[in-house]
Every structure is written in structure tokens, then in C-alpha cells.
Image 1 (tube, rainbow, N blue to C red):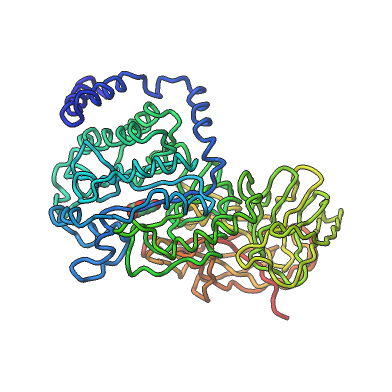
Image 2 (image 1 turned 135 degrees about the vertical axis):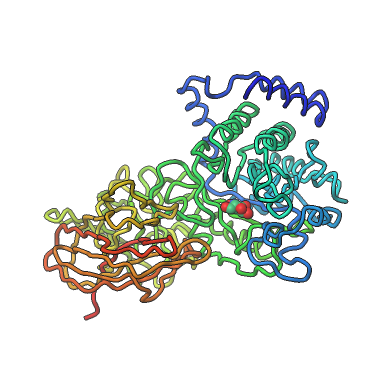
Length: 610
Ligand code: FHN
């Protein structure tokens, strides 16, 4: 920041905050930025601020703002899309949208009750919209009168009330803040219906005059803040993202900055909305998830996810080393919708019985999911989360440890088990005897007590149901030129438009036979878009197949509900002997009329029906 800009900022601050705040900001601007802090201590500071976040695992996101008043309907018409996007979707002029403020009087807002619901669900932090893209501050801001205290009849500061309640309950309070999109401001991003797209915008002015002073208020007036959840980086430059990161860390060195600050400058990675990673993420990460289809309240959105899906997603995120941030959208009265309250209570019930397998638990030692579910770990312990309860017994391949005991976590019942090793194939097998009915319809957890730290065969193994699944994220990618193929935050290969890029895998077969080869691709984005017609060549254990990617049926994945998988049949092959094999997958032609190209979730070898 230039000296002149600092002076301007201080002058502006004098006008809008009064002298005390201005001198505080002036003092802050003279503190060294992180660029001058030695690299090691910056890393140490980051590790320190990540401590609570690593343990938290489960948080509540709250999208609450003026948009809860129209609740998805404008001038008698339902507006498609997300509830909090109504101003943008219906192109509501600023002056009209502002008229929602006098109608917003959320008298039933009860911070203690919200915190109680979160705590009872097992959540450890709350991230609430202090300002979403509509630009309306949900706290008493002195930067702009466009805030809940000054512009509504409510005349309370809900963020202050939440800060007090969260503090009392030992829950971390965190603020969502939309740093680029602000449809109320002519210099910000997003509103091209009031302020024409080609009108001159001074984004830096908006950053200096609204964003930075408001973020300063949020970090100054509400006690310790766990993190600032910046969102939609859009056009922000790396320097501007860095300015915000530095501002946050300067005021509260222990406050985290979300991955969506942009340019990889966040303290942790944010997955795409509702995207649950199936691949081992390298950095600490978090995924935000809606409980129905919207974030902000919409009166006609009744598409509530069942508790089984919420539990499964939570466990899946944890088994990949991430945090699960589950959203609620309170009404204009300030109430969390009842279907959300009920689901959170049930997730909390499940967690109370199975918390040992969640909090403090590490990721699965296997790089892939298993046919019946997924795994979390602790030193000397493995937790089998069984979503699909097998008949009579559950078999696990590849565990090298000796198992000392197998216990149903929810009721402490001991289960019988046996183990076998085939040294010639380097193949190990554990079989656990099961009661007929699943003890928990959402997720029954079997705790294995092991003879030491978990050790497994991480090669791609044929599974006890005899299928071989080769996930795209575990393939070796052969790049060509600049390449385009990348993996989205689910672990699905996308942007594959260059036919010279190809992938292959090595895998182990323990039970040979005849297999149908199936290619799983994925619909993309919320538009459920998909492009087929690509021709691919496969070499499977030395046998050649040519296949066209076409829609031969769908497969739903409860962890990633919004992107159904598309099944394409590629043909049949036979493997005569157990052993190690490889499969290569090479595009011959890729159709990219919609610019989506080829996607790839996995290639599967499924035992052929006899
Ligand atoms: O545009 C926003 C959306 O309204 C919502 O806040 C989500 C939550 O992750 N973030 C943005 C879209 O990714």
C-alpha cells in the first residue's frame, strides 16, 4: 500500500469511524506485513492458528440476511436458484432491495438457542454471514448504515449476541464476509443491472472503504474470531487478497482465512460447494454443504437431505482429513427451519454414540472407498463405518495388522472375526461376523483394536465382492502439451479436452474370472451438464476394447448428490490368473461442443453375470 493510500484510508476512517477507530487503524497500518516476517515463524503461526480447526471436524454455517424476507419469491413469482441470490437472479434494483430492510424484524432470533442446536449436533464452530453478496451487514457497522442495527426495526446486533452465546458454550464464532461481490456498491463486483457492466469501477476503493474497515470491525468488536470465511474471489488480484490476509492476521493473529480468499493464500483449502472429496487431500480442507438445495432460506425448498446422507458426508469428509461445514438458513423471524433442527438433533444422536470414531480421528489408510463404506483411524485403532450392511459377514482385504478385538461402537458388543494371509500373493483377509440387522440405519461403526499402528496394502485391490474399481484420482496421468485435465475437489478428472492425455493404473486381482468393463463419468456443475460421444481405447490386462462414452444408466453417489454418475459399458474381458495387471485408458476422440469434454470418475471391472 502506498503512503498516499494509507493517508487516504486514515482520512476516510476518521470520517466514518470517529477518531478512536481511525487511530487504531492508523496504528495497524504501520505494523509490518507478513511479507517481512521470517518464513519459518509465518509457518509456525499458521500451524498454531490451525490447531483448533484440525480438531473441530464439524461446523455450522449460517446464511442469514435480508433475502430471508422474500424467501425465494419476488413480486409473487418464485425465483429460481439460491435464496440468497434473489437480488441478482431477479435483477432487483438496489433502491427496491433496500426496502426489505424496514420489513426485517427477526424477533424470534435467539442466539443461545442457535448455539445450543449447533452444540447438541456435535458442531464445534459457527460461520455466519456478516455480509453476503447483497452487501447488507448483519451486525452494527459504523462503516455503512446499510446494516441490521441502523436500517431495520430490529435494533439489535445479532453478531454480538451470537459472540456472547458462542463464547459461553465454548464454540468458535467465525464470520463469512463477501469480499468481491457486493451488489449494493457501484465499485464492487456483481451488480450490472444498477451499475452497467462497462461502467468504470474502482475495486480498490471499495476494498479500502468498505471491506477493510468492515473486516476490521468484525475482528475488533466481537472477541476472538475463529476464521473469516471469504468467498468467490472472482477478479481480486493476488496483492489485494494478500492485503486482506495481512489485515486479518495483523488484528487477530489466530484467526484463519478461508481458501476462498483466492490465489491459494488461505490458511486451508475450501472444496467446491457440496463437493465431497473422494481423494486424499494434501492440505487441510473444509467443504460447505447445504441441508436442502439453498443456503439462504427459501420457503419452497423442501429437498432436505436425509440424516443418512448427512452422517455419511460427515464421515466421508473426516476420512479424507477434512472439516464438514453444514448450512442452515434461518427465516426472517430468525428461526432455523424445523427440518434442519430435527436433522441436526439426529446427527448429534449418532455422534454421541460414535464420537470416538470422529473427533481426533485421522483419515482412512486406504486411498479409496470400500464397497460397504469407509474407514477412520486412531493410533492402534481402525473404525469401519458400514453404510451398506452385508449379510452375515464383512470382509476387508489388505489389513496387515493382527486384530485384537472387533467391537460394535454403539453398544459395545464384541464381534467374532478371523484373519488369513496368502504370502505368495501378498494378500491378507479379515472377516468379521455380523448380526443380521444393521444396528444403526445411518452408519454402524465397528471398532478394530490392532496390534500396533495401522498398516495396509495401499495397492488397488480387487474387493471381496470381486469388483475392481480404478478411481481416476489414483491413476497415473500422462500429460501432453499444456494439458487441460485436472481433478475437481471431488477427485473427478475434468476439463479433459486434449485427446493426447491419457491415464493408466496397476491393480491386483485375487479372484480371476470374466468381467464387464464399465466407465463411470460424471455430470458437472449444478446444471447437471454432461458431454458424451467420446471414443476411448482401453487395454485391460493385455486385452483391447474400444468404447463410446454414452449414457447406459445412472449411478447415485450419496456423498456427491448433485452430480449423478453416468455409466458407459465398454465390453467384456477375462483374467485367468490371480496377480498384478494394468489398465490404460486413452481417448481416440473427445467431443467438447459444450466445452466440458471428457470427465472420469473411475473404470470398474464388474464380475460378469454367469
Ligand atoms: O455465491 C455463494 C453462495 O451464495 C454461497 O454463499 C456459497 C457457500 O459456499 N458460496 C458462494 C458460491 O460458491
